[in-house]
Image (cartoon, rainbow, N blue to C red; front, side, top):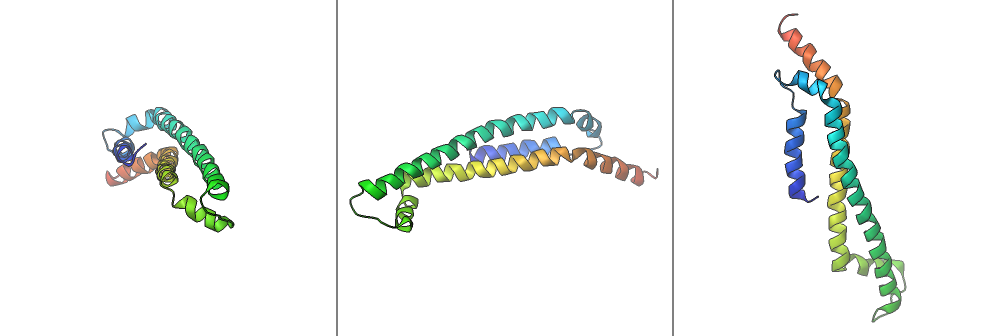
Length: 135
């Protein structure tokens, strides 16, 4: 998922989690469906994240081997090799994708947590509305 897609998802999440007088009953009744919807998104994005993690480890291993044994100059310390790996454009590109995907996963974990707490939020919303109406 790209950052632009994440921003679009945030708008959908805000709409799905927003409570109003008109939708509070529907939100309460459709809570399992809402949770499943975002759980499916989370699982698919977690799969992408795990693949990126594997690709990152694989690329790091190959780059380490290259800079340790196949480079034009001798690098002996791990720190020197890591400096070259971190400066590698291919590795940097993959690391950027990995970091964006890590943000997506963190966001989706928070969304699922908020959905789990939505029952409590709905209860508080109803109690507040009853208080305002004098009941």
